[in-house]
Figure 1 (cartoon, rainbow, N blue to C red):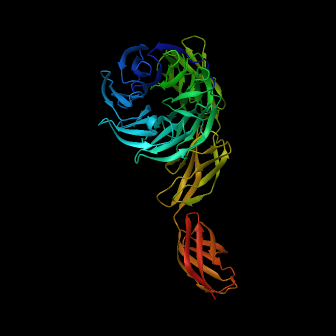
Figure 2 (tube, one colour):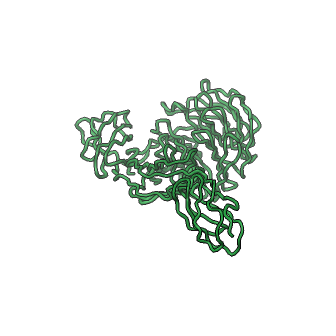
Figure 3 (cartoon, helix red, strand yellow):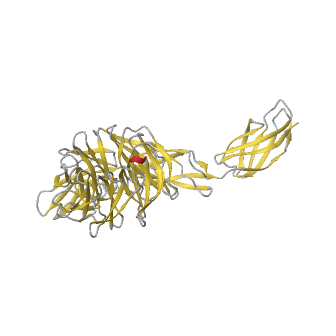
Length: 543
């Protein structure tokens, strides 16, 4: 992605030793914790100034705002408590005790639960926001640092600097369900709006890790980020902003390509970024000079890729766009466009066959280039392997074709799955479970189109109801008919533990030829299908 200018920076003085920030859902206010002065600075985003200072218990660190915007919660590291702020009066209404050196906070999407990383107790405390009390504590690894809840509220991701790990907590059971290892001082953590990706900064590894929430594994990394601290994802999921303590800068990362598209210097020990709800600005806490910087997002098109057939809805970000009278993609006018404000335009791409510059024209003035848009050829799915599997899912399926590099997801019927590996000519994905047997259409969703002409068949567990005849010679060579259910996808047949030649007649019948055996007596008949394995004990007798 190309940008026409760097991010702009404006600084707002706050309290002593600021650490973290949180923005209200309406985007009007930013709460900044000041560890050194034991207070919270409240920034008005319209005037870009501190409108009031709120005293809290000692050592405020993490801060979050309830989904309804009526409460702000502050983790008070020095007092082992959480301060609750009424955002209508900006007064502390209560203090929740019983924590142990709390650092980070996150609130559930429904606002009923507050989760706190209690570093002193190596645990995550679960707080009822209705009762303002701790209702559970989940033991985790050493040094829990930051915590984030997925958009559906079902899981928490916790970075643990002391254990160099990331743990996953099931919010229904308040139990750790997965521990991801091999990190180097994981610190900041953020989640994509769709919940498919979690982003973790490795303070000691100089990189951003991208985790797949379906497979609970690192699927990609963005290197070259010197001592990254915090990370925030834009509301549309297209950009991530990472504060770089190592060189006092902030990087903007295109999450379509996972590439750094802009890096802005001139910060002072930047610790924490937050993005406004409209995605137009980023507020960055400067721990070093006790300010908060305000950045405009990079100019350009989001998304910046789409099909040759056109029809891609995108947001154009730039400066001086309020009076734009025309938008062109190369030499073609946009299919449509709407000016939102002086920095944003919504546009729809026209039909084209190559990548182009995006120009805007204001009145009769010379057009200005605000970004590029890349046209992708239609993707093609040619084959999937395997074509069937058990109802439980879990197997690895490979999709081959072309133009698959921009794949966003794969659908099995209506179930959406994120690929674990993507190349232009192939991708792999873990087959999800299903409730009923039968075929489903496999659809690959790319940035250029949706393509689905492959079928994956879910196979129920097989059964054997009869083996006829049930007697035969030890010399082998006797044909037998095996009757049962869900036999159409048979992969192997053994009689007496020895592989037998077989043929599938229908879903309820297969034929097999008995192998020879040195001794007479009963033999088990075992059928293995893509749906499972079944054994009929002593179903055939050698004589």
